[in-house]
Image (cartoon, rainbow, N blue to C red):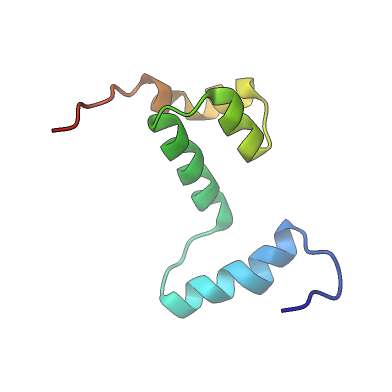
Length: 78
């Protein structure tokens, strides 16, 4: 694909994300994937500063929205 103009988050959502999700039978919005990514990164022990940089937030915002992941005890692997 060649984009004739810069793609922003709304264009990406409408032109790429939703058609692909519809084609494979899932109904999720980009925010759900973003939140899932942040949650998984923190749960796996990624530094909060790294997660904040990836998500485009500051560490305080990430801490506020994803604190439940920081408080979840890690289970040992068997």
